[in-house]
Amino acid sequence: MRATPEPATNRSRTIRYHSPEDDKKKLFSQSGLEQLRALSDGRTPAPPISSHVGLEFVSVAEGDVVMTAQPDESHYNPIGSVHGGFFATVLDSVCGCAVHSTLPAGVGYTSLEIKVSFLRPITAETGTVTAHGWVTRRGKTAAFVEADIRDREGRVLATASSTCLIIAMGVTQ
Image (cartoon, rainbow, N blue to C red):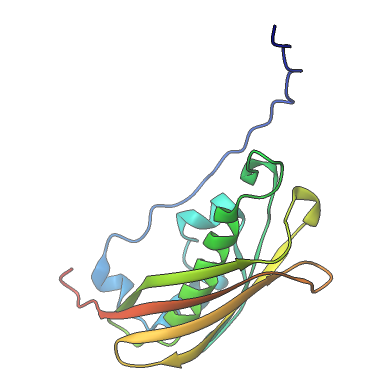
């Protein structure tokens, strides 16, 4: 006979976001650095993914972006620690934004690959984590990026390396 599990504490999380810009002409009229600075200072609403993982900009410079994220129990996997997808999402975001910061107006990017190394677990008790992404090489069609996530004490929790494809977006797409 199976024992009935104790009832879990019910919790909820509400995610609020603005739909991304539909007007591609307007969106790609600025350089990537200008776009990210508008996001960072609140002139442009944050992308929807930000509300899922509590992403916020700390600093934006050409080829170098720092963000924080807020892990909580809603990110847990079955063994009671933050799911690897949280790490990957935060690292992919900071890598992509580092590349984005190097792009002229009318140019976009997409992730081709990301390799994540998980070094330490994250739990809700870890608190706010800081992700840093920096471009190591940017060519005409591809950019190479490194990133890490650190806890409040500066311990490295995960690292990543990524390759992004650089795409001329045009204004008709």
